[in-house]
Length: 247
Length: 276
Image 1 (cartoon, each protein chain N blue to C red):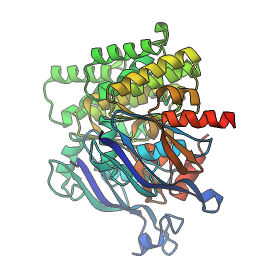
Image 2: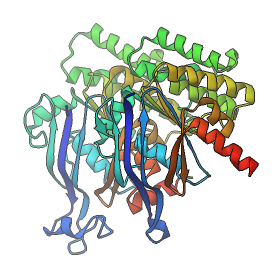
Image 3: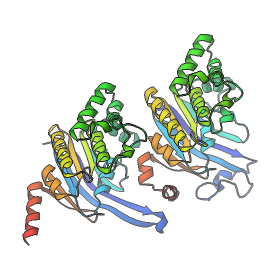
Image 4: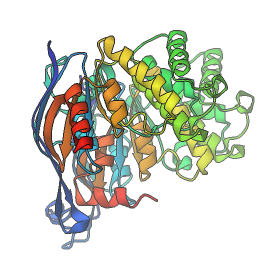
């Protein structure tokens, strides 16, 4: 199995000038690899560095040390120039935060179709794909032409997830994409995510919910205080939990 | 490939003692020379823009953003001493040193500018259509019917009511005037458009529509742009990369989302934290 991402010694510290140049450690010497087609879940307590890790991989945060070699483009995402990052984001690397960062006054269907249009997909085809995804995620059809700014948290999250999946990126970074969904929609989302990884999209996703992790992940990376504790197969992760419960 | 390549842009107002650039800037905490009182509006500013890319420049009033915009747009210096190097793909040499005619031709062709102040960009006594047609005539358009057709298309594109094109521009709303300026800037299919505070003075709902409109056209035409604004929201919505300016200097550069979410410079952190 080939690797998509090789992370070595990834470190991120923040200099907070307003706090008397205080340094805050976000990530400390994190190393792991991500294999093609797998679903790697990142778990940990709040503040353990899960979102910081995703943002460092996507370069929304600039890492202070280490490397993240993205093999499809043969580039170190931690250190390459901004334009290389832009080109990779525009082609094969996707990211979805927990909250929809929608552009005002764009209908839901166009929010989802947008990344496809930017990649040159004809408008009609892009909108077809957007409909397909919104339908699969159970967003009521009467909302497709409405502006997501007025949507509920769960509805917005469905638009967000559909937008991330639309261009079928090679590597998709997801930050708690199902946190606001009701159980039924969450199941639909999980099925869609599982199908996507079958179709050779690799996913690195932050999840809070153990149940979701056990249903979608192939392996689990456990973060604590900005350090990577371990990366284990999902079965082992599930077994650990049972031991904890028994103990 | 680089479309627009600018280096060492500098503009100084007042009689410089010669040491002004060393004595001002971010470390000095001022853009006014403590020795001679000259104002260094901008210095040591270098940037480049690729085809289809949108570069944002943010900073508070007086940080030098508009001075940089004017130099990039090859505007005539009204006063002050300007220097630096501006190159545009397909055109020879440093365009800041080019003769008047060359700069005039570029301003009416490859480079479009949307002024911060409507009165600098439009003649309000002319009709809206006339303001756009003027740019086409300056660029060498001669056929009356072609000019009318092009103006009509540009009005439709920038969402200005076409039936108002023969009314005096002073009778237009602020939002319409801004749209006419954008129509004028885009009239000659420029390679790059410079927008200086594109939404200042417009109420919020009109701002949003003007930005939406520009974003759509920018993407459809794949035109490069430099967007200057004190409003982080404007830059966040439009720009791929962002420069942060303070006291006439660039203090930080990066991907727009990186600058907004992981600001490094003390000033950028303050700026991001000040957003209401």
